[in-house]
Length: 383
Ligand SMILES: [Fe+2]
Image (cartoon, rainbow, N blue to C red; front, side, top):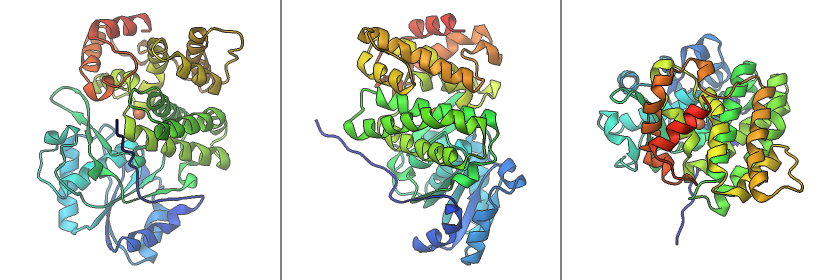
């Protein structure tokens, strides 16, 4: 059996790293940057240190600030119109997962014909895309490190991923200072999503020692710092640990994909407009409980990372403690498990289960296989 491991070529990180953006564009030999962000980033001037660094280096810029929460292909097409008239040669994505995924999808449309829907799935992008530099302002999606762009698929009322090595960023810039203003609730949602990325990568059937190393490191850093970052957003060291952990998790899961928690969460109808991280956090306890009989040794290790005392317990009892450990983390950051607390209607559970079971990218390498009936029962039991 042969394996490959791939990741982003260059990572610039540290407090104040945003000041390096101009130099990084120059390093790539480029000079016309199209900045992709949402209205909140623009309004709150989160992008200001980046814009200043680009201006100081003589990089011409234009801004697209209409990134959608669950980006639709139509929103990317609108961005592509602006990008082409500006004659950009590099895309800089600034923000959370939606902005970074929009930047990646835009890099695709800048180089290849639409519609974007034809690229949903694995490895359907025919060649290189426009270069991207990605700058996360949340510590959660790990999107800056992955070759995945998740978009809303209006035809099926769900989210779908475009996965291609051509979507890897040329450079990523991790500046923890850009995450200081993230409110506690979003610190919790995004941080829990990052933990789930590491967890689902660690237990994945396609995990290797390379990806497991990333996953274990990321889970330990998040378990030790999420509560601190939630309790005091100005804790710069906790913010740095969370941002780096989120990226390290991304380095792993970009090579393994996620599992049943993401399959279920991404199948929740887009009409509810629930944040991705919230869904992952709310579904994680049932996903851990479902999977843990398939890989008890790994789940026992996760329980230990989450601070559970597993002494004297059998392997399967230790594994089940991971549910308790994660639920305790949820409680401390004020997030409730299950879908009912967030207004998801019971009549939608069957559809969620069916779409999740059909999600080959996420379920094929999940440690426990599950059909729609099993997943529906799981959703019902933990509603
Ligand atoms: Fe996620």
